[in-house]
Length: 186
Image (cartoon, helix red, strand yellow):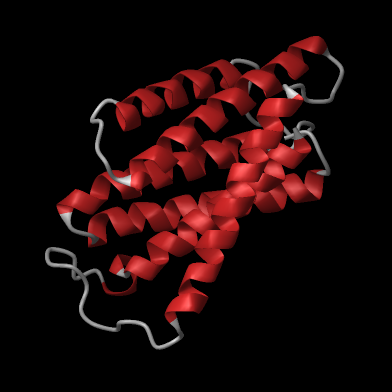
């Protein structure tokens, strides 16, 4: 990531931690929810790799191309089923945002300027989407009230706290906030 190294390290830790929670969630949720949890884990790992500060030993020069290819495939996987669920649309937008950032960061690294590149209109559009997503996702639990459902986890889950539906929303809000930080650094 092109920005303050401490911010990059903190964002890397946040995204890697969220990815770990999503991997745990995959084991605790019903089969139909595992695909979403896997997509969230992939997004968190990719964001953690991208957020590493530029000066640290880490991803090699080929990483931008590899991330673009992985998230291009994730976009196709999110779009091909043509499901009506909005969550698949969010994963598709997230995958495209990751491709965009990987290409922009790779172009900046090859340019040797030490600063990232990108199209301001695309960056602004993605920023607007993620800011609204984070605000909506963060306010939704507040609107529902603090005394939300406390019943058992979905059938087939039984994973305790890792299977709670609130965890999925919290992970997505954290990754959305991380995406805002990464887009601002772009």
